[in-house]
Length: 148
Image 1 (cartoon, rainbow, N blue to C red):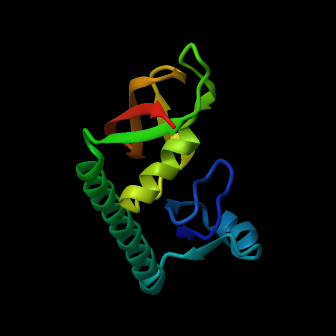
Image 2: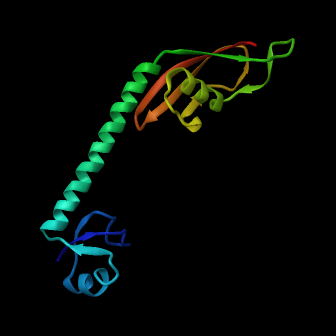
Image 3: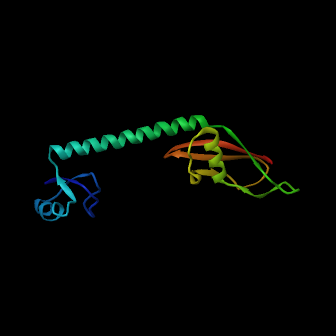
């Protein structure tokens, strides 16, 4: 019997999958626990609609990430920091501060964990950083640190 899973079932499949199972297992275990529905026309249409909506959402996210990459690629973000007399910063410039600067200048919300620095920024100068916008879509930026 073909069934559409409503929830993840161990050793059978994930939510939303169409799987083949024995009639007894479906009637006596899956249906009473509301883990699956019989694969009739209605269930198949719902499955198809859910897959197409998921694909549309992924396509939209990829399109937004590509547009953000085009805006950010090669940009130089100027940051100011306080330092001692020898040029070393009090503290360092973190990925959180860089993410806030990106949001302030370009209105692109980036998670601080997605900003990767080549080295720790503890002195004045220009540094390379990468911003992961989506799986496989990465923008390379530069961070220029000057005295406040």
